Length: 209
Image (cartoon, one colour):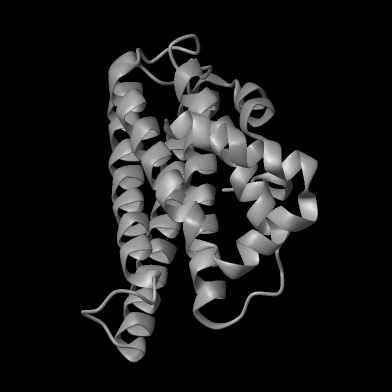
């Protein structure tokens, strides 16, 4: 059912771009539930697939399916107040997912990592992704004005707290990625094969993490 709903929403985006954009503007929280569920699926798949490029395809596919929603949300620039914070929270989860999927796919092609190390790295990514998804689920539950247990001030405080938490998770994922890749750089330098690692991960100017 979830995939059917996502398909219908995507079709609406293609047929009526303006209408879809307005829907995002009026209630960006609608994205949070679907994305939180997919983030959970990505984390689950990351735990079960073999640490090979072929085995990682399911994780990559799940992320690419959700990326369409991040891209649509990035085009919306007239949100204010708590709606803007909700949007930014969702996009930070998108950044976390992107760093994980893109970086780990590169690491799987890196001969400087042993299989046991790749498994440990994947475990770290999936834990951070799961925690981010839980924050997104909480965001959906508190962002709606119909939550009777919260007044507007309490709701704004909760959204601000989730926003801060997700910023920390995004920073952690970036730091975790840099530290893992630095291990490959050290090993490549010791072997005199630094150029291969630079070709795989890019130079300082074009690194996204």
